[in-house]
Each structure stands twice: as C-alpha cells, then as structure tokens.
Figure (cartoon, rainbow, N blue to C red):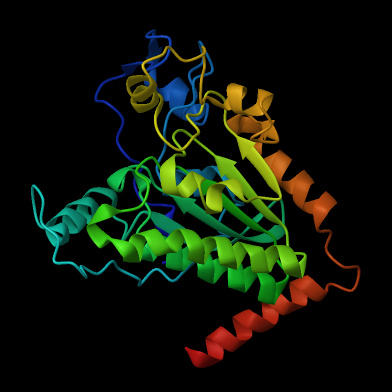
Length: 296
C-alpha cells in the first residue's frame, strides 16, 4: 500500500470547530491543534494520534513503503468474551483501516533511510499480539541485513493480547531476541514512547532502544498507576509513571516534543550510525529493492 496508506483520510476528531483539551480542559480551535501536529496550543498536551498520522508527521513525503501489510491475526484459541475474537478484530479493522495494531516499513527522514514501526493505540489499545511481534521481529532482521537504523514508535496501552494466549506472550521474548541481534550487529535501534506505553510492550521492545525518547507527559510503565495505588494502598508521587518522572529516575534518555522529533531522530541516526562514505548502506537498500522487484 506504500505511501497511499498515509494519505488516507485522517482519523476524525470530535465534530465541530472546537475541541476540549484532555489535559488543561480549555476549548481550543480544532484546526490549530491539527496544524500543530495534534498538540494543544495552550498547555502543550500531546493528543494521541493514529499510526498513519504519525508516519505522515515523521517521514519525508512519499517516502514510506509499507512492509508485511498482508499479515493478519489468527484465532488460535477460538476465544470468546463479550464477543468472538474474530468479530472484535474485524470491527477494529473496519474502524482503523489497518490489519492489526502496527504499521511497519521503510522510509526516510530528511533524506536518511530507515526502517520504522508504529503501533496504533486505536486498534485494541495497541496491544501486542502475534502480528505485532512478528512485524517488529521482521523489520529488526531487515534493519540488520540492510544496515539501516530502526525506529519504533510505541503507543501500546493494552499489554499482551489475552485473546491469543501464549502466542501473544511469546512475542515479548521474540521481539527482545530480535533486538538483541541488532545490538550485537551494531545496528542502531531507537524507541519513541508515546501516551500510553505500558505492560508487555514496555517490558519488551519499547524499553530496549539504544536511545529511548518519550513525548511529554506520556504514561510509561508496566502496571497502571490506579492499579498500583489500589494494590499497595498508598498514594503515589505526583506525576508517577509520566515521562518526566521516568526521565528523572533514569528510565528514559530524553523527552522531546512532537514538533522536534524528526530533527532529533535524524541527528541521533547521523551521530550513532553514520552512512559509510562509500554508500554501502544505501547500496544495500537499493539492491534489496531490486531483488524484491524481481521476485514480484
């Protein structure tokens, strides 16, 4: 589907010309929020956005090539809760126009080629099932083969997908192993944690970046603060499990506003994994494309 995936109609925000900020509760002009990359102009609150919009904001125009877009989740347990798992998947596919909770592929930022994956909170809260894990593992392998940096943007608040049982839980180990092979090969891996990044995602691929970046005020952690508070029966520190708290306690490396993310990622890639003077990485990318075209 390539770049056409990103050019689909943006996910609708609330009807009308004005919306209420979820953080400061002020009424703000909807168009101003959209033009500011979905950030509140009053308090700098970063709204949650779909994966395709994230790709549009981060990548150079017309540069994205989707990979493994044909992968769809199975139903190994014939799982039924309030509805059959197959019906739930179909409903979210129709709602988001995605096959599952992640989009992966190749693209470029200011001309620098990279592999990229973005999870989508609006597809079952971005929870990790077998397709999410498989796609991350595959693009990690591609990044090693092509000597290209990998950026994964996490918006996963649902943990491992219980409807797939152990097939979902094993994705934590699979993605972690794939990323370990990247580290061993000296290939750069950067993660961007957005609101929310929790549970199984945070306990695996989201926390393993060579550089871990977070958007402001993003909820980051394993178990949610409300559950922790109820379990231990104590009040939690102000801002607990938010980006600023995580930075102060050494869990992440930096906090970066959305408008500065492109420039920051480009600077990190150039510093940590510069393109060889002989163009080796670029040539590998081109040769891989030629091979794919021949197979097609």
